[in-house]
Length: 245
Image 1 (tube, rainbow, N blue to C red):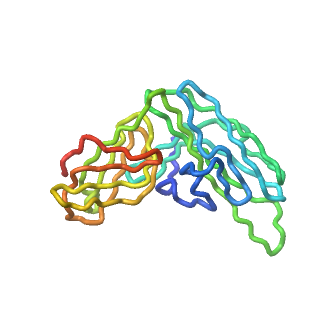
Image 2: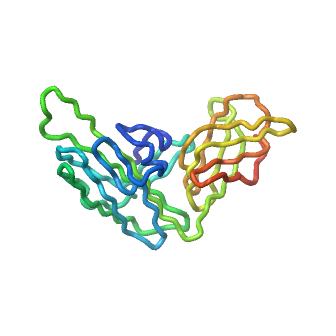
Image 3: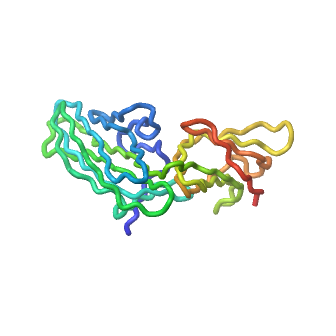
């Protein structure tokens, strides 16, 4: 199995990319002359097939490659992409005339396990055979999430505080539920009366069964008594706080 590593967090710019692709702010992702609809796909557990539309708003034709990957994350938030565990895409390479759009169909692997499954489609604009003299064309890369979850699946967040390999104090956030959560910020309440809530502004996906280690600014700061996670759908308390270790 080959694992490909991409930069941490959904906000990373791979080439020219629109943040709405990841955060679902708009119904379509617009990267340069290419538009993708929808920006993310969520499927019921019994479903296998999905589709997306790629539109070319430029006058010139565009050639696009679409690849499917299984998707998970390591404890540092880095995307791990598995080309052997992803959706089958048809067509995988397509030419889109200017002002036109094409439909791309995807077939997900057979379902395994009871948790939500996560995948990504990587959509690359390929270089044209000829480029007008004196012009520079930026090639686009778009990363699109796909989730397939059982009915009633939900995240379940837990936390602890520990030390990273570099000795820094670290907030460890676990998702022991069976559905991902889309984090926009984390509020930490200190132990003791009168303490000020500290906000960690960082956006990322925490996948089902995943964890992330978040370095804290103060290595010897106050103990944390509670953690509330701000998400794309509202606040979510991280339950069962574990003592610092």
